[in-house]
Length: 77
Image (cartoon, rainbow, N blue to C red; front, side, top):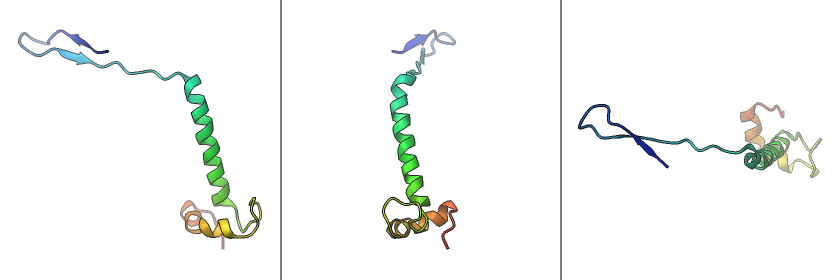
């Protein structure tokens, strides 16, 4: 809902004001948790080195994210 203030001088158009919506933290918390969990999962797969700490055995995940690992500064060679 917007309101208008009086014109700054006679003949000028009225100046509308904009109300900024508020976000309840209880509504935001589940989304923040989900995004954080997804971020941790991505970091896990990107940082899994040669299958040593990877859930699936082998180097498949390492090869899929190889260039991303170098971009993020993870050593792998």
